[in-house]
Image (cartoon, rainbow, N blue to C red; front, side, top):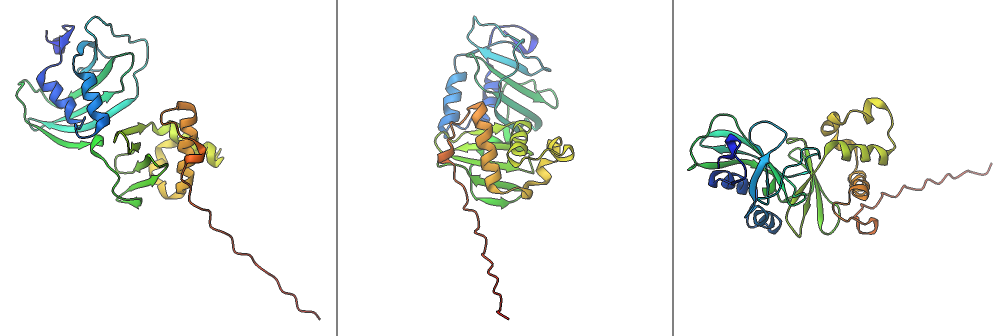
Length: 245
């Protein structure tokens, strides 16, 4: 069956599997596990967006469009037969995986040359601090937070799984504003300006904002006592000596 023509359920085509697997590097355990989740699943229906948005699941399962899409698990840009291709893979939810393959032009053949332009899944921390429009900081022994001005994205890298978990900008920004007690509308209501002000906040501000975010979303199991905080600089004591008259 050709699911691109609306025929379900259908096996994931070799071309589309290769495209998805480009964003799931086999040498990283977390992404390798996700490859295994895709194996054996069928394309059971269309998602809520344009052509190229499908849902994988057990052959007998049904797509439920009444619930929102799950969080993004992997994202990247490829060149498929030199045609720009945007790919998104969502997190596993109720044994189903939503994905999006958006070609900028028609790609008809199955035997494709696929070149990777950019994929967040390949990222590993190579430096800490602010460099190349990217702020990278250690949050806990297992986790590293990265904020990229270039890609306008926020993610957390796990040393254990080597997965980069994308953090929604608005959620993180709201927690940062709450932690900093910033209520002025010209700042607190403008998350789109966040990436132009990365140096305005300290590493500790970002760490505490992530801890606050995780307190409600429970994505990383962060504990306050395990957060790595920079020591606050001690204020110099100023002594005033008064001469006796």
